Amino acid sequence: MIKKFFLTTILSFSAAIAFADTAENDSVEYTPALQKDRWYLQVFAGANHSMNENLDRGYHHFCGINKESLGAGGFVAYGREFTPIWGARLSFGYDSNKARAQFYNEDPRTYAFHNMEVFLDGTVDICDLIAPDLWWEKLDAKVFVGFGFTQTFGFPKDSLSYCTTFTNYARPLWGMRGGINVGWRVSDDLRLGGEMSLTAFDDHFSGVADNYQFDGRINCSIGMTWVPQKKEKKKEVKDTINPLVVYLKPENEGVKHRQIAGSAYLAFPVNEVTIYADYMQNPVELHRICESIDVVKYDSTITITNIDIHGFASPEGPYDNNVRLSQGRAEALKKYLMKVYDFKESIVHVSSTPEDWDGLAAEVSNGNFRYKEDMLKVINNSSMEPDEREKLLEQVSGDEAYNFLREDIYIGLRHSDYKIDYTVRDYTLQEARIMTRIHPELLSLEELYNVATSYTKGSNAYLRVMKTAAKTYPDNQIANLNAANACIEAGQISEAIYYADKAGDLPEAIHARGVIAAIGKDYEGAKVLLDKSYSLGVEESAKVLK
Image 1 (cartoon, helix red, strand yellow):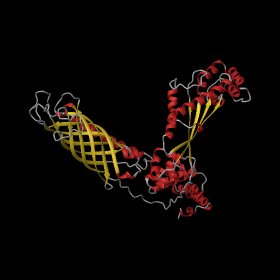
Image 2 (cartoon, rainbow, N blue to C red):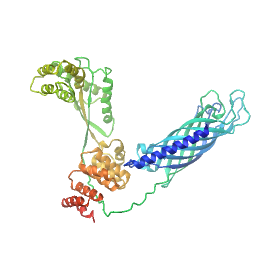
Image 3 (cartoon, rainbow, N blue to C red):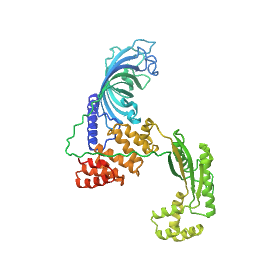
Image 4 (tube, rainbow, N blue to C red):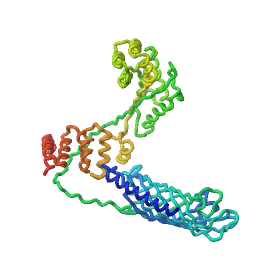
């Protein structure tokens, strides 16, 4: 059994590595700025604390470490990160453990036994997961969980106990574990650090099978991790094209104004304007509204300046009653939010549309109705009185279509739209580095540019932030120009073309498209573009083909 496991584990791990290699080679782009350990070797050794039935304070108390429960061990491991965050590790270890085959008052003696083990762990790089761009770039911390098998041996020959079931023969057993490995990079290839893990084995691990389902062990080790760096081959220079690009620094945005918008489809009893938090789908809708507000309400860098609530009713029933319902239900939502969040009344504003004919027109246009054109003529005829328009719509629709409107369409027209306006303070460079990963929309384009240029030009982090700026501000020509330039310098020409096309008619964007054409050996097209950009004041254009 143990031989089969060893063989299966090794083959499975090798297949996973081969698949990762293929996926990596086939990918257009590997996620920038994150540090991926292509593969690594580890050698660790240290002490262990055994936890089983009869060790005094051992099983239940992690703090009950004493000489009776201490042993030693070590392991060697081969690991691989398939992405900058997720990876796997195969480890082979040896431990000398302690156990007692009887209760302390029967015989205080402990005995040592040994085990060889193999574990396959899944790893998560928490540094790359949280914020790889911070000062701790030399720190590597991986949490792991794994499953494996162990072979025990070296038990004493005599049973030592008359009170408990004791087996003194070697056997293969299963186990599972979790822990953390932390290393500090002392050179490009070497990390020094420590590892702590908790392993649970089948109850027979210590030779005793009594009272508890598992035997446990805590391992604390120190050691080294060798992470060989990939040596990049020098690329043969075949062309004399100088990919000289021109970046533009964005202007200061001033006060950063942002907005969150959404719609709430709250349910009300017929003709009522009171919100019942547990009525029909209201718990889900209210949670969704509060979730939107919580994002900005409890962020100390954000100040809410205005909340607009606009209520809508469906074009059903008397118009005057719909005026009451749309305004009253919007006011009810305002009252609810002010109660939950204690907003100042001066920043919460309410308005309403008694009957949402525009929404109805959109629904009918997208639907499959027999008399669609006739229905739309009535719906879009704003010169008619609302109640007359409703009656005429019922006539031209037919019973089946109108019943469908009332039962399926109108319910979606009874809603309250909300807009939350807020301002965001300026961030320090260190704060902005973190925000590029979690909330780049809170950064100004200038802040994103400053973060990018704080990294080494051409680095993965530099490229990532330039692309983040273009994705956050997709219609901004300067953001797209700078992303195109970064992609040109990184050799990602297909993406450079995409961003350069979105950069519009900026002279620097025309220059970038000329550089791309030159790299693609379209020298005639390049000359046309570069001549044009040069005539518009981009002096670098004259240097590209020299």
